[in-house]
Image (cartoon, rainbow, N blue to C red; front, side):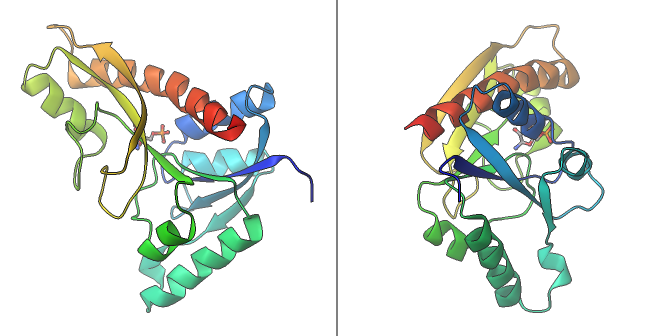
Length: 196
Ligand code: GRF
């Protein structure tokens, strides 16, 4: 096996953060390979992209298992095979089971579209966050990369980037600004963690 560091990405959506990280890998800014994508959604941008790029894709959805323990075991088996140095959650909408978190301490990171601990926790995702930020008149927002633990958006913060919220911002315009920052912050943070 090559000595290059190995990244497994988990994603359920458009995959724009996955693509941003992959671009940095291809540009040799991140000295690693993205060896696999895990998704629960067969038809999503992340899966389409992984397949087009020849990145191994595993489709695993807890909803399709009768026993949660079987799902957890399959997930652990996939990760055992992939042997990741870093697991990157990039818009993955399922909770990572505690058994996986325990097996990979300080190796699983997530990105969230707010300045945590603000606007984080169960149910805080996507446009809900940006609606709440604009409605409460915050002057700034941003994105946060953090280690995960068993509570949503609660693990230790690794890095954040801020954006200013203007009076004229709508949830949609704010979402765009934050997404741009995510595409800077996530590849930079992955690079720093991989180099350590
Ligand atoms: C991002 O906004 C991220 O903060 C959140 O999920 C979204 C994923 O977007 N966790 P994309 O699929 O990477 O475009």
